[in-house]
Image 1 (cartoon, rainbow, N blue to C red):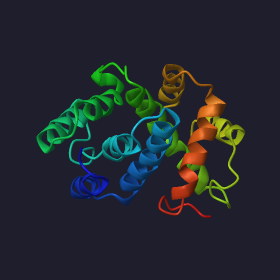
Image 2 (spheres, rainbow, N blue to C red):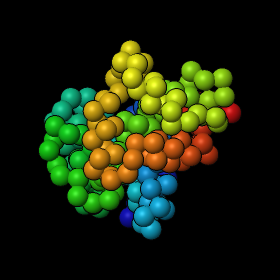
Image 3 (spheres, one colour):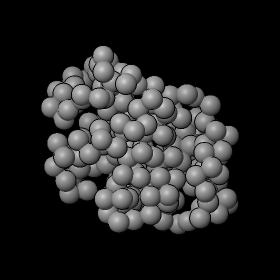
Image 4 (tube, one colour):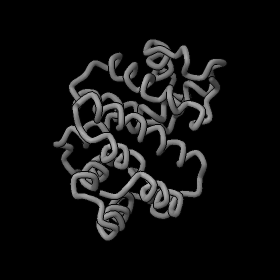
Length: 185
């Protein structure tokens, strides 16, 4: 298995946007937390989160993203389960999300970004953010309009957890890295 440092280097090689790098860090934090919850390897799951969109700037359209990125990861020696989870996070690719890693990545991707967006407009960042505030913002279609609410709902359904529980879990997972995400503390 590659190290986090190697994965971070790969992310930085392909991703120049600060916002996309921060998104990768947010999803990495969410995946590490879910790995711990499920008794899995936080390093491997974290790397899946860190690299899930690493190819997006170079290949912003489906199916190039994530298919071409998956080939790069294969050539670099990343494991099949990590690559399958990454492929599964893009619904039009139609790769089944069968593993807990794949389900967690899909469920965390859009919501992690949405939670960060919520934190950006709050005086205390995510320090006092709750599930009810996130759900209220989800109803506002103009807020973070690029975030698929449908994917968020499908993700919690596939993961088998209530929406409030998933939101709260991700908020807690993101708090330790909030300064790296550009959120006020």
